[in-house]
Amino acid sequence: MNSIINKLTFSVPLSVEAHAIAQEYSQGISNTVKRKQVYLNTLAVYAVENYLQCMGFATDWKESDSRNNLATKLMDVADLEVKGIGKLECRSVLPKAEVCAIPPEVWEDRVGYVAVQFNSSLKEATILGFTTQAAAEVSLSQLQSLEDFLLYLSELEVAKSPEEEDSSSLVKIGQWLDGFVDAGWQTIENLLNPQQLGLAFKSAVSMTRGQKIDLGVHLDKLSVALVVKVASESQGEVDILTQVYPVGQNVLPEGVKLSISDESGAIVLEVTSRDEDNWIQLEFSAELGEKFQIMVVYGESQETRDFQV
Image 1 (cartoon, rainbow, N blue to C red):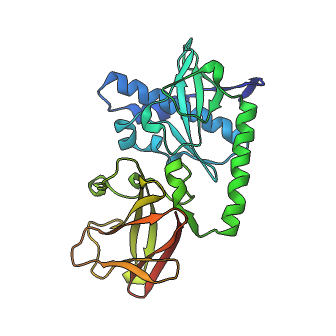
Image 2 (image 1 turned 90 degrees about the horizontal axis):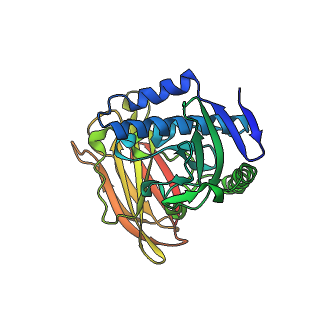
Image 3 (image 1 turned 90 degrees about the vertical axis):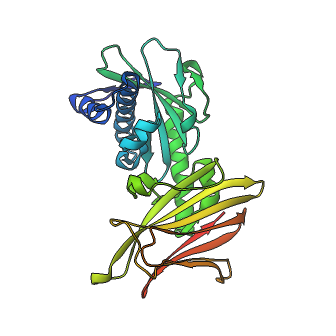
């Protein structure tokens, strides 16, 4: 059972279950250093999830990159999705270490970074504190306390709730590059198979998320992934790439329509799938504060999503 050691730290026993999960996600990795990295990252996320659940916060580890085999092999990632709040990065700290290392690939799309220190036997993890600022190394002495951490998460939760009530269908895409991704938008690795992940975009500074959409009924039912990629282009403007991919099959049926409407409802861009198209896409730019709508249509069925930059 978890126990609070003092006001500033929280101890989590690393059970057989914890090590079994870490073993599952690190097995098959031939590189010894990488295998150890994935193993420790998994234990760190396990500890933070355990802690947050004890504190009354709902988590979704399965929707996090740290539970995606491809993502863990390509990146040094230890994220945990906290429902209604965003992603936390759970960084492992070895015994006697004085700093918490944060790799550059996780400096975006995070609401905070939690330091998790292991004992030498890896039987216990201690949640030391957190920071909201990404840096290559953060001194353990400079971490904010767990009291402040719980307050910070509660404030984020409260701040997002009224926004969802007032405009539940409005996606604040302009905040994605700052790490605040709307609920219901997943990483594309969770939606598409590896052969479909060749998403091209001219800007390196970007954020990609997707959402499964069901179109049609009965025998004509079609599931597609609506993928939206936003990238910073210049001050006051962003580039947006939106794509539609089939889910559970390799090609789209003929007649799937993707369109972009402006705030007045007028269609400004449109594309329709042809026979054997693997995907369809539209690319455009929008100014900060601008609203637009994405619509996906197949037969008599249509789904719309409202966005604001």
